[in-house]
Length: 261
Image 1 (cartoon, rainbow, N blue to C red):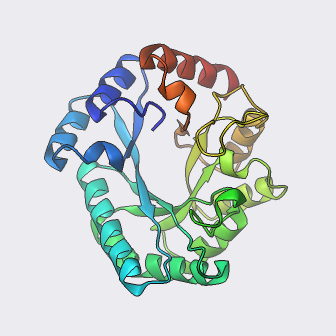
Image 2: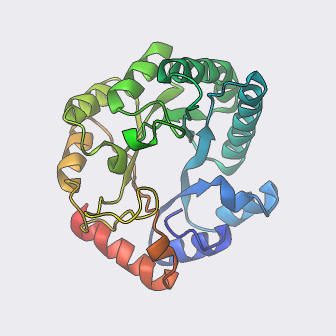
């Protein structure tokens, strides 16, 4: 998603050429190609797939939409398994027509329904808490503490959390909650970018690492001290950067990561 204008093939070719060893695949790049072709594209390049994004969006006031979400998440698990992705990242969803408590209950119920299917296919489910500004319609899970509570309730190696600094950097309990999920083996993914101040758009104006106020190196120390040794994934949503030459932009991404992460 960081280089959204590129196709899956372009991402794989250019990431590999830049010496980037991993890729998280967003499902939008799979919409116009057969899954078998996507698998071949990935296997033709020296990249490991860290995750598939995204599943989730479980809550709804309508039972039919909740059922549709379960089927869509099963398709995501199928895609992840085929691509060799060890997890599906869950943007859990919310419905403004009901309480956050009810949305969280429906999220937990949705994961409960999916868990046997995920385990059968060898794909973990990573609950990603989103910044509270998205609580109305994108995620009723707003803090790492809430995500930890939910993941721990399943007591399963197949359910954990994804920690995105854009959503969590402000939380005074962040270091404690990172230690908590690290100690329990529940920290499955770490996403990095930066928070620009002022920001021009709460969704599509994320910054390159070093452009904002997120203490990236400090958070990295916390996650590594907690035992996380996986890749730190750059995830930048930016209409400004998507409008630029993506080759030049990718060079800046790599440089910013090396200098500030």
